[in-house]
Image (cartoon, rainbow, N blue to C red):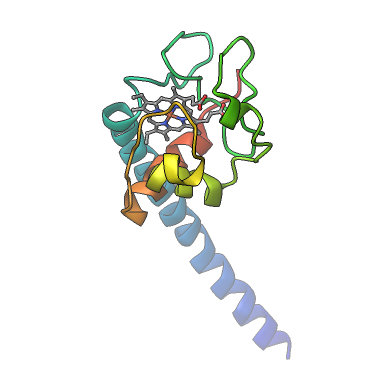
Length: 131
Ligand code: HEC
């Protein structure tokens, strides 16, 4: 019995650091890809940092935030009154068809339907520090 426990203990030790490394490397790659996509698809209207004024609201700390909460930003009535929380699922629906998801929004239509592209952008948004 002791040997079995020892065996599993060693196996866990031998496997997990490698897996943790692979996962964190993969996450880093996703964030970097997301940053590139953010700069091509979103950056012309959104800053990743609320100290940098842009046409759209800044998106730092957006994952998990209640919609319409960037102070001083003039949201559409639709968005300001929506009361939705920007969960990953809501952000996916938004990237896919924002004006279908929320009729009356003033964000011009974006149609990012590719789940992998959404994944990357989500990874990047999730990595942004709150200001
Ligand atoms: C052409 C300009 C433009 C582009 C491109 C754009 N947005 Fe927006 N976005 C806006 C505007 C304007 C608003 C405010 C909408 C409103 O008040 O109805 C907004 C709002 C948002 C919000 C809600 C923020 C909040 O504080 O509740 C999210 C999330 C968002 N955009 C994500 C994105 C992402 C992700 C991309 C890229 C895939 C993107 N947007 C591309 C202009 C843009």
